[in-house]
Image 1 (cartoon, rainbow, N blue to C red):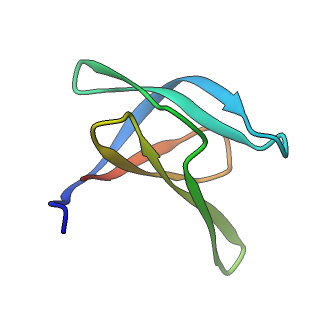
Image 2 (tube, one colour):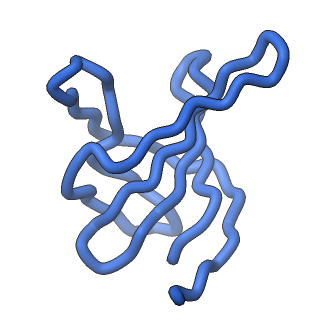
Length: 83
């Protein structure tokens, strides 16, 4: 079992990549004065709350897993947790 640290803080995504299906995903993130480079497209789930649709992605830099939430309305990203 991995230790999960809840964060729930807005982060800056500084680079995006595209998967085979042309879905965009974060490639690089800045948080707490550090830059994190993600290895691949990660795991993605779509959550619908009434009219709102959000994405939750689990990304990895090879050492840790980062759970990110996107509002799908202009590039606002929230780091939910690190494990």
